[in-house]
Image 1 (spheres, rainbow, N blue to C red):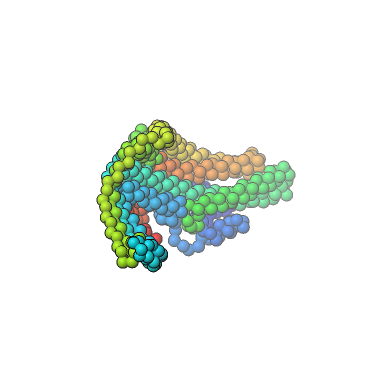
Image 2 (image 1 turned 45 degrees about the horizontal axis):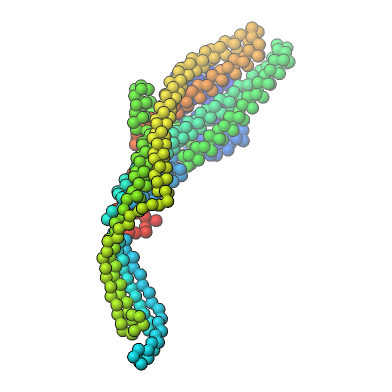
Length: 494
């Protein structure tokens, strides 16, 4: 039933489509699913803050998928994490360098003055001696530190990839939340504004009835008080919307324009909570990152213990000098290949202390992995409960809205014949508004909760959401640098 208190005072061209369009009745009970009536443009938001509404600018509508694509491509937090993974990739060639030869060239040039007497013959003169040399060192054994360093670097790289997955999940989850917050707060702002229109008409009719003696001054004061409170709530809704728009801009990277309806992703979720928990413990990137950290900590123990082993190197050296020891045209050439063996005897206890320290760090990493499993399990249970709660609240809120509409229409009819007071009408109107706001919030909560469950499981990704975007593959850069022996330029040209 159309709200008769505002059938002539609100222009039909406005986005809220007056009270009739924002009334929640059978067949139209989802404010967050009205394609163009909960949209927001930058210019429109400015007008809202000024106290009015304007038509949205004719730009392409933004969908949940397109907004998440923007976040996936341009979010600074996600991009800096990708750069961090690329930087972590370089630790593999660094570790591999321990088993590669090192080559050092050296040279010298100078001035030499010679004054010597031998057998009664005195020799004097100056020469510009030069010397060049080349040294090649190849490690043959270092307590397996090269192999363990490579394995540790790989574990850290795999862990950084899991951290990247976590960041991707957080960005997509925050993006979906920001999207739904703008829809919710825009719908609530429209409801608040519509309520002001209703209460203005209520106040006008109450004053007319007061002028003819049908009601008292108390009724007029009650209507005025309700209108003032409604305007206060409207300003609060404006501030909430402004905050949601700012968060949207921070995460998505653009101002929200015309936001299309959004749907839940419950079809992508497991059928029951037990399956969801099992998948989370197996696949969640936080758990996987913790397990890679355990591997890296175990290898660190071996690396430190490797310092107590002998080190064996092969060193090749060649030197060439001219004007040797100040004698003009004298030359010197020397070449050698030697084996160098270094056996640590006692290092003052420092290596032993670091070995014990590494073992304690390993124990800590294992406990951290257990903690992450418990945290993930709790997150899945909590998110699943929130989703079930939101679905139940929606059903209750729909019933409440329907009942509140019927009650309001009945109370208004009774008020016309003097069986109800103005306060009864205002109370019923406020009750209907509250139920509509509750329904809008519950609809938002259901969509957000579905994304939260997906994130808690560890499957919230561009691939699983089927976003129309080229998925970032961290293995591409890894393959480009893992066997790189030389070069200052990164693969992308920087």
